Amino acid sequence: MLSKERLRANLDEVIWNIEEARVSVSEHHIVKLVTVGKYSKVENIETLYHLGQRAFGENQVQQLEKRKEILVNLPLEWHFLGNLQKNKINKLIELRPSLMQSLNSIELALELNKKLDIKEKKLNCLMQINSSNNNNQSGINPEMAKDLYQEIIESCPNINLKGVMSIGANGVDDIEIKDSFETTYKIYESLEQDGANICSMGMSGDYKLAIKCGSNLIRVGSALFV
Image (cartoon, rainbow, N blue to C red):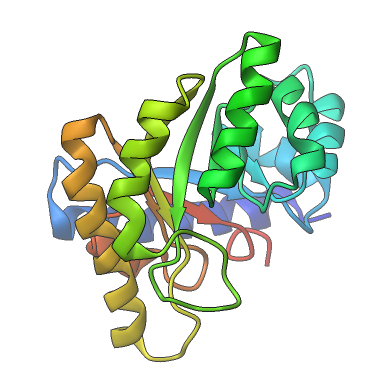
């Protein structure tokens, strides 16, 4: 468990970096920080809440369930960030995350919509785009993204599509990472007329670059928990 002072210093540094990158885009550009709990202790999440952080994300349904249960008395905004297996769909619906960020195929969208329909529920989601064309990353091919976004809107009425999410290219080359973010952002811009208002890009190692490329939601874990 990290000390409150350490977590405060880490949070202050991340917020400072967000502000610096945000203002370089526009003073009116707003960026939301989602803390990725993942390997961190639940006590650290509670401390960050008391330091003012409200949105938290988990990559596994079991982890989300456990932490939501432990921290039930805190008004946290929970996001689901990981690859959703079809046999975990019902459990995720029961957990009612504020946002499911990793809708990565039309097949998953159709199955999720079907289960939501049965339960008479709706779920806010982001469509995940594999903008770096990395075989090790899940997500929709950028060339198909706009058409599939429209298809999900039309065929999945229980899914509220709020925008897109992507993971930066895995590489040390900033140009390659920037290219992948710009690809996602161009798709996001083309979907704004369809109601898209969230462009989720950027993690601990590249969130400043992501913001400069237009991201308005970042997912930061290790930079907060070092």
